[in-house]
Image (cartoon, rainbow, N blue to C red; front, side, top):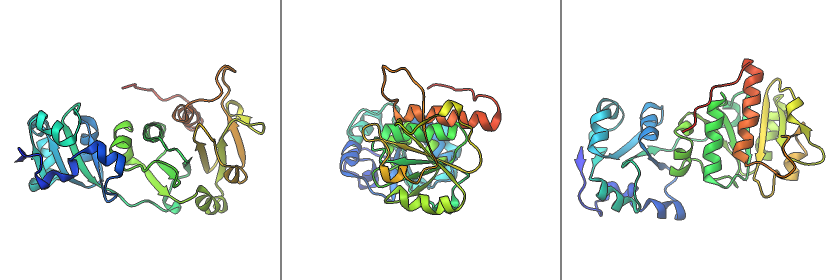
Length: 270
């Protein structure tokens, strides 16, 4: 471990002023991961961990795992107060790491069930959707240019490390990705409340499928709706116009899980 006692030490530049990095955009070839459980899941994943910056306690608890994944010259330690000063805000756990950003997939690498996101611009919603996907056995998503960049500290944190298990394809528009998938016999379903919607409660999902979710303000674009095989909606009390997109994804993904397994998954809330 290399002890850091100077905020201007160039070796920890990736960890400096993390809030400003979120605002102005950090490097796309790497991203910062924050939190005890999330860093542990990063170290256990197939992603490459470039460096780690943590308290002595975390090292003592995970030294074998850390040494198996991170070069000793990239293992940094500091006091909690020094880490807070470097990060630019009060860290909850004082445990950070930097991961190498994996390449995006092409659609041919995705599985038989895919979640596609149309302009989901909120990091918390994206992280929650990714977590829901992994919870209900879906490991493939497609994002468009209007969706929040997934390999970021906020998305990794909210996903609780599920980000490290998901396959992501990225396209400028969803239309680019949907055409080859439709030719490959995928059924395309939009989750949208409109006059053409069918109640999802009565729907039986079969075969290869794509579930499209849009943002809560504008919904799914008309161009995408035109190529969908069905438009589905979730029944709810008339006092509420729509659900949060992450909540809607949990309901749909749980239904598909039930169709596949015949029972519900046990949920743990953290």
